[in-house]
Image (tube, rainbow over all chains, first blue to last red):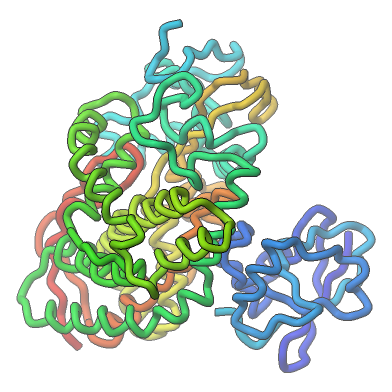
Length: 107
Length: 407
């Protein structure tokens, strides 16, 4: 079991339990986290599950693939160094305590 | 070796349940619900002797098989024919009927041309076209929803977005239907499609040529990728053809099915009027509830398995997306049409690397149309019986008499 915290643009936080193997996107949907829409369901076709990974977690969430970057470039909120598609972050035990920020806009 | 429906006959593992039905009978295509239920109940994977294929319809197995592009390939055709053994009826699509690494290259080009960023630039045009069409239809006492609205809207906005100089509405709509009937077995629908293919296909190929496209459309973006050396100019023409195979008839079907859903569920139209922001999620529910693409196949490219049952190389597997979208184990109350469901993970656009590359533009078109209608239309009422048009891969309406009541 790992804990993941989603931080809304207004600063409010929700911490939920997740299982290793799940994606940060799927966990958000399972817990009705506002602002993670994930229209395409994880096919890397929509950029509506965009998150900003908290800086101290960047080293542990892996790197962005080229197609992920292409899609992030189309996201409704600005792409930053910390931007990820949450469908592309698969949780492991090492992610316990992970913090991600939900952007202002997804569509 | 004698082929069955264009593929090698399959001797399934004896533990795989035999499901002796015809998924392509007219009765089933007109009303697929009972088939979907029976398929899911028959097992996680079943053998259909009539066509010598396997089939999956439970959500988990359908999603897994359909998106497992390593074991279950698309390059051998997404219908009954095994392209390794049987010559395809047209040069295969270089994005739909192909595997990585070739697929990766063409997908990138298409994904860029159809990205959310590009779609945002098209939205004003979509909204203006929707307003003009809806205003005109509100003057009529009755409309035929399929021709007057479901076909009228995409054939107005999509060829323009692509930058087509030649527009033949009938050919554009019918080409998709031909392509999708072609993935079925050798039945009357496929034969009729094949008969029309030379005429319609010839027109389509000609319309995809670079000099038949404007310099500012999606088509030009694809040809620009050829100039940049990412693809050849011949491949660019093939990818523009993919816009037309997969971008017109599918959206027509999506709109027709949406109108049908709302005409049958007036409380859900009221819900949209109350909260027009639900236009996008409403379309997702239309997709889940009606599965415009009901079935595509994959081919096992090596000895593999589904749900622990062995599946031999060469086996065709029907992935019944419509059944997965109605699986109660996944959706709880799948028979209920609820626009606030937000059915993320539905299979209507597929999943994985072959997930519909045009899904953003489809969502854009539907969002524009439903938002305009929510501003102008108080009620959508049936004005006669809705008639479905059986197709080997598409669940679309043939006629949809409606009354649109203005606000």
